[in-house]
Image (cartoon, rainbow, N blue to C red; front, side, top):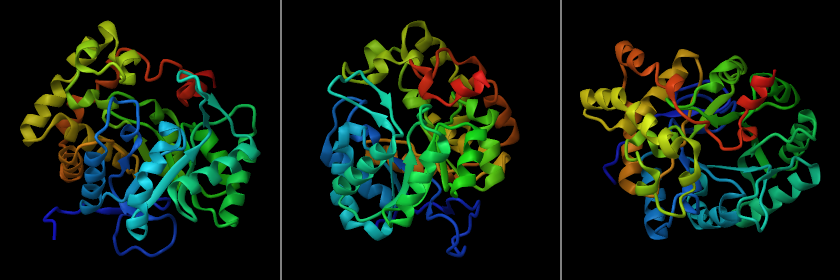
Length: 351
């Protein structure tokens, strides 16, 4: 026995929250998942032994939704996870993605939902992860050159072929989610959602709640900003950390955003918690307001941070505290992407 208290569980795709719930709908997972992206790149150098220890801690804490993608480390992230997956295949829900294209140019990001490309991606992920089936397969980004119904149709074929169990979408609008769900049931929608980023509340959150689709917020800690650890990217971040060039971490924006954390720190102090825990608790409770099943996927490479994050699932914020945190998002300086075409908000603005 590890002595670590396990978090509660929830079922993706149905809106249920009981551990005794039947087998219908999506997979049963911990109410908080684990975003593995930072293990392989983007956030500076990684100690792989420490990262593996963090994965072990996740399982001990009941964090069973493990999230990766084929582009993270150009496949290296999936390969790193493979031994862990092999040891614990029946204990975890494995999610990966297709749709973002990378080349030898480290700065290039393209998007493709071409049917042949999708099939090549799923075969590559199956091989790198060392599995016969992917539990949850996401369209990472929508390709405007391919009709959404066609893309979801190809994904549905992968389900019929036994290569994928459940389907997910990332960074789509509410109308797009409804369109996709009409072709094949969608178990989860993954988009950025945090105290710093709330554009998904325009339409995606409501559509997900209406359809019984679980919401999987990525970057629920504002790419680390909501931990309170960063103010000056040039000083606080390593040279190979992608946040050096992120709009919210750059120049005057960094200081302006750091100043927004004052109410987060005050609420954290009242709970004997960290700012990160308050940010995570906020996501859980904000989703509850919408009647929405939510499984945030904060990422970390440290066991202590993993356990800290998991403990946030047991924090309840008062109505007054929620009101104190409410104004933050509207005051954030800088877009959430340097290229906002990668965010669903860009299409909602045009609509």
